[in-house]
Image (cartoon, rainbow, N blue to C red; front, side, top):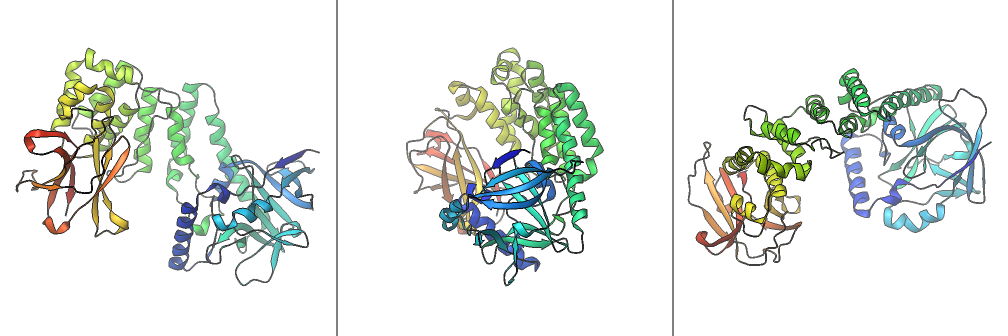
Length: 484
């Protein structure tokens, strides 16, 4: 008989208040919009989520509560043996007392020294863990906590959160389904997730990647399967594995495999060409040779490639080994100069944004000045924002990614209207920004409000700059195109 102690720590303890409020709000809105029960589970939702995040899954029977420990007789869910081990789970109910006001986590109800939750609002019956006919315990990897499914009187319950009454409780699921069927579903999900985890654990990089690619092709159709609240307790989905698997391939540091994985990622999971979801080189060692970096640069420079391919290549360049990236300047000046030329001619776009990031990372102060005219390695990117979330209250978020600290005023907002052929059709508007925060340092943001009354409908190109007049500009941001 084994005796293992797991801390009983709920996910809500590890979240910040603002995120709890946001999640609760979203759940409440969902409940009213859908007309479904207000009882929903915070944290993992699908069976695949629970299995993926569990260190071990037990079938269990409650034994006793003693000395702030809960005793369970357990066996692993896929065990073929009939005998049970014993585990203890620490009772941290005192911790819940201290955090409930901060995290909206009500304390557990202790009735006659028994731990229990109400089923839902208005129910008089209480489901007591110790009175359950049988339980399934998901013991989490990161939190060393259990997540409960249980059966009583041939009904199936799982723990969740009632977002209307702010109570943590059990709620009835899978009406008409047997407990044996629910366990079978959990076993099936575990079996298929164990398969991909076993492949990921293969030590040989080339062999592992080959098996991962085979797994992707075999499961291609199910990788886009979406699970809803209605089927969260079914054999459904892959949790985050449908995206993780593409990242696992990059860990081997094999450039051709990483590029193939990136293309498959977009092909299988991303249907919209304008979607900004791209793969990152998580091992950061796929592109560490001159030939592999040259390969990426040529993809960027080829206008026949799709925008998404060129952006993906730039993202990999940004993650690439800077020592090898910098050698391109010396060993292949023609190729590097073509990147600078592209930067000078490319209209504001995702390609230009990513290209600027790469050029900034491999240039020195003098080279950056030649490219941008910014003397002190200022590198300011602009993006659209909405003040207080109001879509009618447009603003510009200026973010300083550069090393240069901007300490001088005035700072101006420059607006230029252009037609569908990118030809300027109006004189530049030069508006002083009175509330621009100085000093403007690295990784700092400045929010600039726009007065839409000053902008007629159409296409506008926007940038900000420091300096008094055009002939004496000290620095400029990257440009941003917006449509009014």
